[in-house]
Image (cartoon, rainbow, N blue to C red; front, side, top):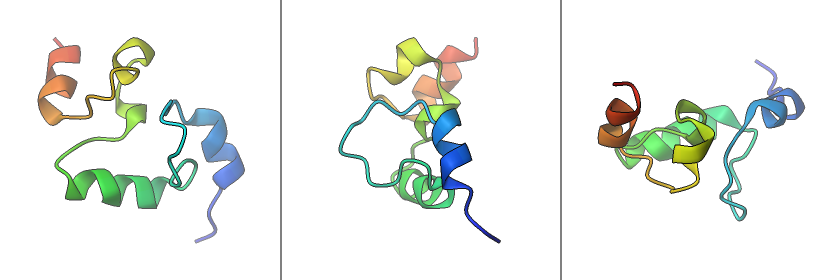
Length: 63
């Protein structure tokens, strides 16, 4: 399957500037999964800015 990096970039809300995985969702998902985290796109903008990608944070934002 072909990567749609340009389209993915328009949907990516990650504010971590040195991130090399922006727009490459499969790499981003694998990276965060390995660290027991979720990618920025799972969080609202205001929560994402804190860089807390934990599953606990995700659950808190859904209540």
